[in-house]
Amino acid sequence: MEASGLPRWAAAAVDLLRWLARDNARLAAAPQIHLDIPSIDELRRRGIDSLYYWTLSGSGQSFVSESQRAEIPLQRVYDRVAAAQAEELVRINGALAEAGISFAVFKGAALSRRVRDGAAVGMAADLDILLPRSLVEEAKCALYALGYRQMIFDRQARMLIRRDVQEIAALEAQHYELVAFNRQVDFALTDAERQAASDFCKMPLWVFADAAALVLEVDLHHGIASDVDCEALLARRVVRQGLPTLCDADHLWFGLARYYNEVAIHGKRSLRDLAYLAPLVRFGEVDWGVFAQQTNDTMTHAPVSHLLGFLNALSGDSVPSEVFAAIKPTDDNRFRDWGSLLPQLFGMQDKVPAAIAERLEAR
Image (cartoon, rainbow, N blue to C red; front, side, top):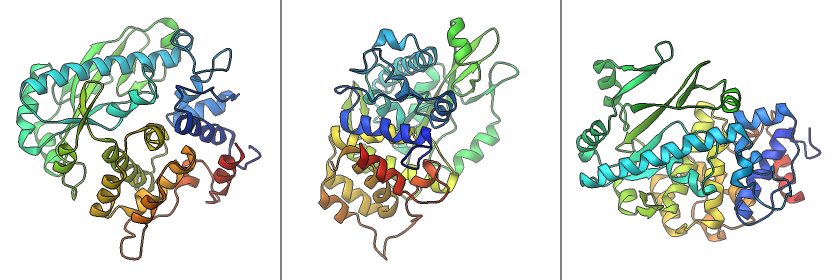
């Protein structure tokens, strides 16, 4: 337990997220953090062990170089999977554009590479694409032409197998997301990589004693929530790194609202979402007027404001004060307000977030 009252892994997580949010991990010296194996394993379970690996440079003066990253087998696996997914996004982008389909890549597929060019924040399971419902059939045809099918990986058979059409229809009838499209590719591992990733037998990487398979998964969304129109988000899309994506204001709003609900309702404990979103506050191109308007229009004041306050503290008060005034929860808009979820996220069973505030102020 750290002097701040946080578990050792949680104290490191706050320091690493603060580094991302204030120094962007590209410009400033990495924090000097020394962790035991259990703490590193916990960071891995929380989806941000990559941030720790990035600090392991010999000099301690900067982000670990590409050659040094290659000496960390697990990070090398993360990077190779992310590179394969990024290459696939280029193929998909070309196919959808050629078909005249308006769309936006969003969530981790769009944000992860902005945290640090060329380095992955852990391992993302899928690629998320948002498009109008009217263009779903055209998009399915484009994916079929690229070799994708709505299948599921069978661990015993070590391959994708067909899904029942009735099951697909039932799932899609009640959701704004289609059943995932998948394509399997061989994925050779070195002995060191295989040992580091030996417990990966889940999407997207399936590691066996004598082989490994990478499943490229694409999720087509014709909405982001049952009560939110995605047309405005698509109208504000921008192009980054050659791909159409949500603007930073929409990405930040959606990321915060979705993450808060997943933590509160579904017990999510990964911190990777915070790693994606934290740099946007200080280094992104957030139109705070659009952000506030989207929050007000969707009545997501409580989910957004609670987590935005934490990101603001991480980033050194980079959010304009008027933004908090504009999205302040009131008696009329406190929908899904479970208060601060930092205790749950950082392993504090006493539900007292003061230890995190103390950690931030002490550095």
